[in-house]
Amino acid sequence: ISTRAFATSSARAVINNVTVIGGGLMGSGIAQVAAQNGNHVTLLEVNPELLQKAQTNIATNLTRVAKKLYKDDPNAAQQFVEDAKKRIQGTTKAEESVGDADLVVEAIVENMEIKHKLFKTLDEAAPQKTLFASNTSSLSIGEIASVVKRKDKFGGLHFFNPVPVMKLLEVVRIPEQSEETYQAFMAWGKSIGKSCVTCKDTPGFIVNRLLVPYIAEAIRMLERGDASAKDIDTAMKLGAGYPMGPIELADYVGHDTTNSILQGWQKKFPGNPLFVPCESTKKLVQEKKLGVKSGEGYYKYNK
Ligand code: NAI
Image (cartoon, protein in one colour):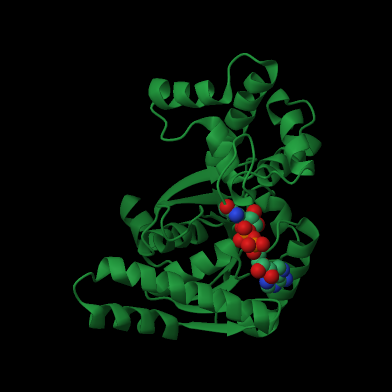
């Protein structure tokens, strides 16, 4: 039996052509890492300006990576950048972007309706073989997949920011997903240098399901006046060995992000006290004090 299982899994689809949808923060990172590791990448954006912006960002980041990889060999560094850039082509046409895709990774705006519209179009345009994945942080993979026929070829591939630096990839399964699709996702993740973990289609997957309520609990502790922000952070760094305290981590992630994740979960799971958005965070978002990126959150930062 085990030999048969091995034979089946070794016959899985090999991923060479990857289409990345959305060239923002995450999409450009995913496109870069895939190209760096030998994939042929097609990057889809909504207009030529945003596509150009994404390609410029990718080129800058590739140069940074090349400098580190080839410290003493500027020629090799330049070659690395040129080779990776050559493997990325851009387009603004959704139907054309998936023509020969083995895998589509969607990293567009976090909105179910917009994702549904996109995947419906892609499902009709893409060949039978194409696997579909969403990089969503807080939406249900099953719900996103509900509009496509190829549910056996659908899953979550959840990367972390910044994609070229963070080693983790969460591979999210839905009940309809085939074993072959799952194995192909895991093999691809490994081939682009990530460590893969697997989980079910549960809110926040592994990391955010633990991290977001943890941050919220720390903020609630601060709101009750049990301890100062600085002491909560010092306590978790020195007492639990965390590299960052929860309040500084909240400022780093951005209060708009954590607040909207909690709001989404609360709407879906109203009984769960861990998913209640924090009052002080809501106030900070209203005041546009989003954390490090806006210069102020629970702490102040020099811009
Ligand atoms: P972003 O706003 O930086 O980028 C989204 C990009 O998608 C924009 O450039 C936009 O023009 C483009 N876009 C929108 N609709 C499109 C369409 N129909 N076709 C092609 N391109 C389209 O957003 P970000 O932060 O990169 O997030 C993208 C996804 O990744 C979201 O689902 C988010 O939940 C997820 N994610 C975000 C993380 C983060 O730290 N920001 C971490 C992990 C996942």
